[in-house]
Image 1 (cartoon, helix red, strand yellow):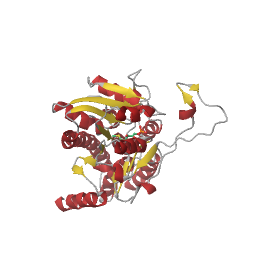
Image 2 (cartoon, protein in one colour):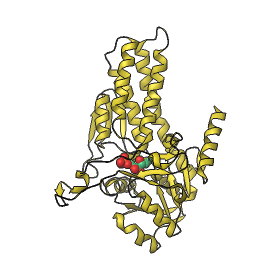
Image 3 (cartoon, rainbow, N blue to C red):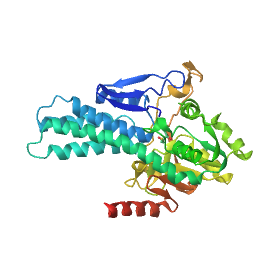
Image 4 (cartoon, rainbow, N blue to C red):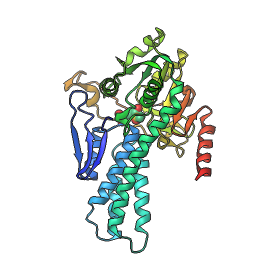
Length: 353
Ligand code: MRU
């Protein structure tokens, strides 16, 4: 399996996604500040793995903290969580991952006479459990989604929602992997995904690593390929899904969804439950990260735009729920109206606990 990240005794080891596909190198994060830096610089990226990375960051911060009393550790916990939360705003998984380890630590710190060693160990165990759960969620999405893929044909994806964006197997690419494992014959079309090129660099790399036939398309080629009948389904991941089913994902996803509708092609979203943000009513309220202009002005280190050109670089866009054929989660496949199916899934989950 592609080693996106790994908990080690020395810290968290990340495959450096900024160097792929040319170099396969690793970065070791020794404390929570290092984890914040690898998230900010996109050494690691993709919503599900950002959640687990942030959880491991909190655990690493707690583990390395010199605090000697519960009060000291509690004060430090706030700083650790704030540092990690200030990295990237759109993927709700990041905040979910922080909160999950934070809640555990806070609860333990309230117990009279608690040992700080026990708190530290529990934080690490929780973060490592999140890693295992993420892989299990990807496998479950694969099982639920495989039957939605064509038996034969082309599937378009945008950005990278694969093993590299999760702890392994992938969300959207996990569904593709599961369909292939069940005997479908698929050809993947990977949008290059300007400006950071997650599709060209990462999706193509990981699919070819697994021997999955892949064609890279420049972002402006999807329409003509759809019209030519090469694409039978679209599947993407998500960074945040609002309570009404609006989906924030990599910039350009919205355009792909509109094109899919025009050509009568189903548009699927695969995302673990941690991506669903019931506290955000619609896509309008989802914060969209604006990244550095240099990602647009420069290509491979060379300037490609005139000095005076104004630049905008939103990293994500919002696809209105009306374009989404189905949302595939580890709890099953949800259909429109999403306000109802999402609420129902939440109610079912709380009833089963
Ligand atoms: O900026 P990135 O590379 O972190 O953006 C990633 C995406 O938009 C993915 O499609 C999304 O996080 C889903 S990953 C399973």
